[in-house]
Length: 177
Image (cartoon, rainbow, N blue to C red; front, side, top):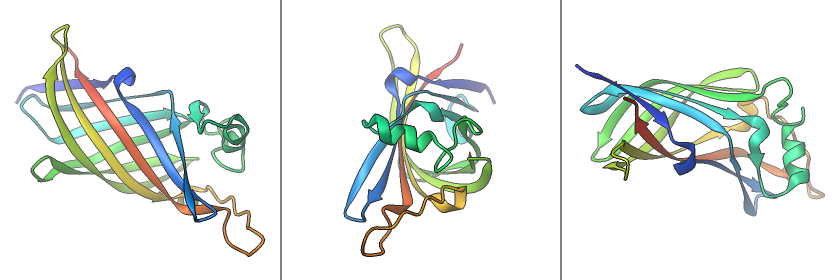
């Protein structure tokens, strides 16, 4: 079995999240700086090892004041916990191009298992001859399970922000020589 190493191409990848605001609409944000990679069998991505790290200070919701609040101790506390990391436990094909990705997510110093859905987008050679492959990854986490306990209420007693956070990542990996 030939082992292949892959690295995330940040120019052709993105990491986003969505959370409900006032339970009536979603706020979308992203992380601009991240890195990661994978190790797999050359001919098969089944059981690949996958790792990822996000720079919390690179959070971007298109509102500077909100971004600074998210970096504060009320939320991510980026001064104390500058990275969000993921390390896979398994990556298995479910059916066709659909996979389950399971691993440990560490956010704000708390590590918990999560399971994500991944859809294989294909493999292609770029104009320089590099082999690339793509995945779209989605899942949900409970923000309170990871210590994001900001609980401001509205006038009617509802939560200002929702509990569930939807994660969406479009990842392009490039084969390392």
